[in-house]
Length: 334
Image 1 (cartoon, rainbow, N blue to C red):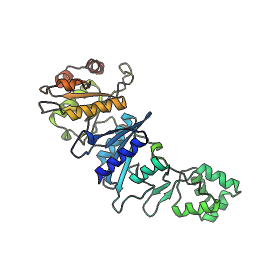
Image 2: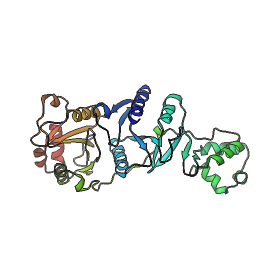
Image 3: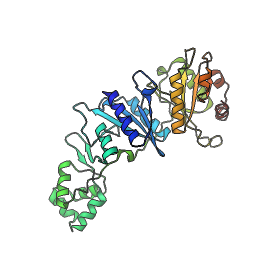
Image 4: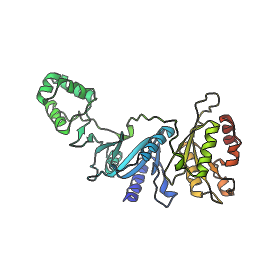
């Protein structure tokens, strides 16, 4: 079911003039990474992820989604199939871990029919997004005071104030009463998840336990720390990159548009995984981000992979780097 929905999402986004990077095109096995599709339209980037059950999501995936969004300057677009009780309703927004989830049909309605959700699902019944400014204008036009409206609804006057300032959402039943009293359904605020506002912060502490890293990965992490660069490790794969590298905010060595660098790695193999390099190359071309591939010293680099124009750095070269300025020089030379 997930594969079918993934193809449908890719199709409907392309019809809406989005450029897409679909991981399944490069990998045959199941994708457990923090996105299934990366999409771009003009200067906006979105990471699309499908969840079979939005009530069964690991904190690791959530953290990866938030961190990738911050580093890539993208927004998550999260598609759910069901919660623990039932399939997700269409034209409804579900909030989990501070992130909005919608059904595929809701996404399709937004992109093809300009039908936007205004219901926020909650236990015990949904609540309605209201256009508080318009609600106030219509109330005043009808010469209805906040006190009068509150008495008709059986709520406190300050609750009406909260509705109009959009710091509180009414229940579906209360919203219907407001709409009836004001004789307007225009007060329902249509929500476009593409415009959803997010506030993410990147914790500069290590995001991964040493036990989660292989010896090779742990060695890379120690080198990165010695250089003085921050890193964020993505725990699930397959993926074109395993970690993101970003500056320690040393203004003297910062280069415009140099960070973040999205890096893949290859260890214990006699050759690089070609799909990883090609996927990473497609990623860099589409999103104009810098990339790197770190490999073990005995990994061979074919002429075909050299033509992909992704800097490939052997671990022994990284070991020679003393600081961030030398690191930047190494990547630019590569």
